[in-house]
Length: 386
Image (cartoon, rainbow, N blue to C red; front, side, top):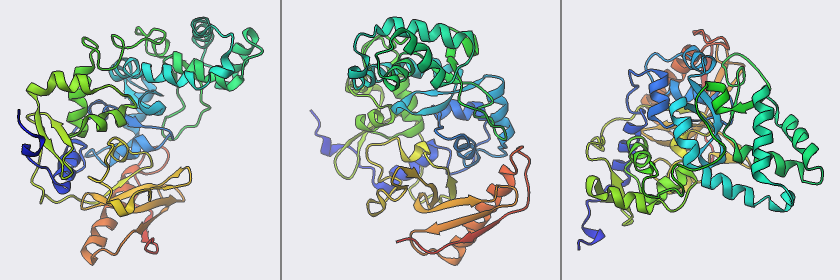
């Protein structure tokens, strides 16, 4: 039996370029927003605007109106999936990925059991489903409805149980660029007119044979590989995925990183030359590039670990030559605002010029709240952090 040490080694730079290629960050892709959202397996969307900025960094000719139109036509939806966080998904992926992560949502409920004494979770799900399918409701309204049946239960625990047991989507205008709206929820099946179901996994435990997890593993590698089992578990917020990787092993390429960790990849997965240039890219807070691996050193140098957060506040990030190099913020709106860049270390004059050009492209392409581009706005450099 071959030893792990005999596997080809992918160093940090090779992993960086391979991952950037999968993430459409080496060259902007000629791809629709819908296809890109599907390829990327969703866009992190705790806040409203990040999905739009994620696609701007990755797609040629992208404007906010394209994704907004998909939201309004119900071809993409906002819902809780991986890591118990809101993502923007195509309908196909909402139907595929929400059942995949259902075991994790069921375990999440266990943390709130003390507040759910005497609550029949199946009955709770049925009552909440009927309530939100009658018309979209706020979470406060859902809590109030459930308290009628279980007045002694903890209100927060009831709302968590409803969110975990049901595939709830945030209905528009929430999530639409240039519009505002309270978070109102209904079921995925009610919103898009296809089968949903209360809870339930894709054939049971993640990784179980016949569960459909194998296809999701392959898609994850296509968007985030080469990657370890632990990397995918971090992305999904799941455990026990080793079995699926072992089933797929005969058809995969297997490497190791510089620490000897086993990495899997698609045979035809892009692994560009490590010297291929990586242009600057402005990424929003919560970009999945930074959240979807157990070992994030392929994008974030060890000395910068934790630098994208202040307390519980996530910062927008700047990639230079493929790696985290600074933070940015936008004041005054995209159309005529100021984009301020704070670098972690000095860059060359030419590097600064590239950053400015990319920042100006962001300001022009993203435009005002209506999604119309504007040549206004400016890019400035703040003090070097650290």
